[in-house]
Length: 357
Ligand code: FES
Image 1 (cartoon, helix red, strand yellow):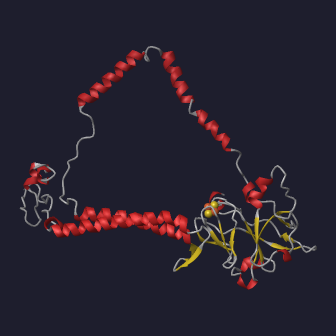
Image 2: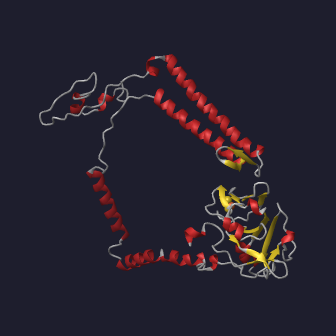
Image 3: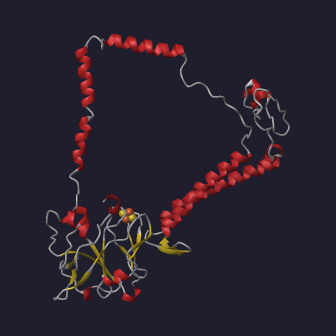
């Protein structure tokens, strides 16, 4: 019989003598010097699966069923990519309106992982050996003779290299090794100049007209129909200017028109013009441009990681990894009847800037 099959072989002699003290079916051995004798391991109680082959078979079938379920969930996970379009939104209680694809992927992957875990746990608890075993700790240090040999080898190596005798080589080598890591510090300069206040402001300012990015014409309120999505940039920003990409990456706007009575957020209503609202187009997750608008629900969806914002409720995040609502631009109408900004955004646009700024 191996020591694994009989754990008592692993016990020290004294502990083995006292094995089971205090546990059912074992004998307590008292030591005068140690009145609190080590009770040792409790006597092993066989489980139903250890003595009844039919119970063991039942457990085997349960584990196999869980693994099979995991396989089906994995197949369903892959099929979800084909079945659900990325734009499909479904209502699922109590989560509300969410992406059907995200929900299907999350559910199927969750079930697949859960079933593997549950199957493994059930297998371990019912069919694998549950005999407790003791494995004594061993000293971590190498035996003295091994340590002596290592030190002797090191001394011999140092002597052969003549590092003690050739001081010039030794000292210049230490100098070279010490200076080399400093080159990594210089590379930090390539991370670019610090952004300083640049991320806190955009080209928007009081009186700047909203220019339709499709027509390059100033937008009028009557150009914005209920249910439409229009992209706008600030007046004066030219597409062929050298800093166009840098500026539009902060200033790009989404314009939508919502019935004023449907706007739930008080400040959003105040900052709008006849239900026309202007929000930053830059996702607050990692900065993708948002482009998918669902006119019935007033939700916009970021195509990168499916963050969803409710434009009728202050553009708050209702789904996905984004951590902040989209910043809103306060707008009005100028004397020529064109939509204009009434200032810059009152917070930095883009990804999670508040945590970094
Ligand atoms: S960048 Fe928009 S959800 Fe990630």
